[in-house]
Length: 166
Image (cartoon, rainbow, N blue to C red; front, side):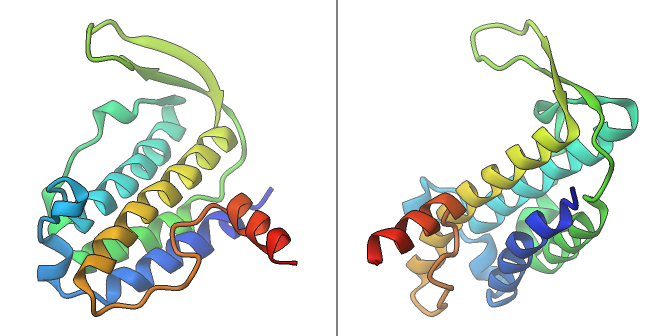
């Protein structure tokens, strides 16, 4: 399976949208996003992919231990460069991984689950599209940037909408 053909179009679409924004637009808090920023959602996407790529080597992925690097959420040029890197680095062989995390706010007990690289890539892809839908809300609130019709829309929804239109 060549994962880059699944991931690359989505990350390219996101990169293009981010390149249309000024740094101020990218980093400004949006009331429609509950006070978060387009940059904050982008950072979240990038850091989950970084956790996966970094965990590939030692076989352990923990999305809760991401860096939360504010430079990614305030500098859209750096974010675009990182998205480009992820697109190039994502194509790896499938292998068994352990997913670690607490998964709750009520305890600090850590759990470990069996997973694999391909499954986590697909999780990150769907997670990215979900956050792109939120980014779309933030960009639309700016009023001066036009996004493609299907920006932040899941492939299954696009297919369903096409079927309904026939």
